[in-house]
Image (cartoon, rainbow, N blue to C red):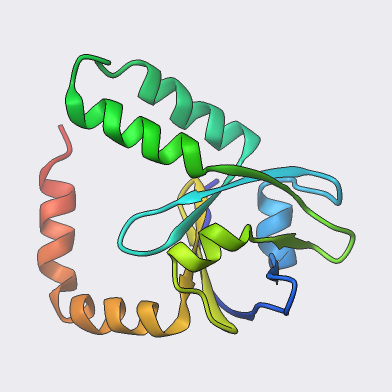
Length: 148
C-alpha cells in the first residue's frame, strides 16, 4: 500500500516528532519498532521502515561500485543514516545532525511518499511546494513519460 498524505507536526526540545497513527498502521510499526532516518533529497529527511530500507539497500547493492557517483552517494547516505525506535506515544527522535542537515525548526511537515516518509522543515516545504505546484502537469508528463 502506498503511503500518502501531508501532516503538519511539531518537534519538541528533544527532537521528537509524532508519526500519525494512520501512517504507523499502514506500515505496521508499533512501539519499539525500528525505523531508519536518512538524508533525503531536496533538503528533506527520509524515514524508512526496516523493509523499505532493506529494499533500498538491495537496489543500491545492485548498482555498479565502479561508478563514482554510486560510491559517493552510498557513502554519504549510509554514513548519515541512523536507526531510531518508535516510542509508546508514536514518536521518533530525529538525530541532531540530521535535524541540522534538514534545517528542521519547531514546525515540520511529514509526507507519505509511496514507500517511505519525508520530513521537511515547514519553511522549506512551503518553498518547494510554491515553486513546483504550478508545474504539476509538466511534472506528471515527465514522470509518466518515463514508464516503459
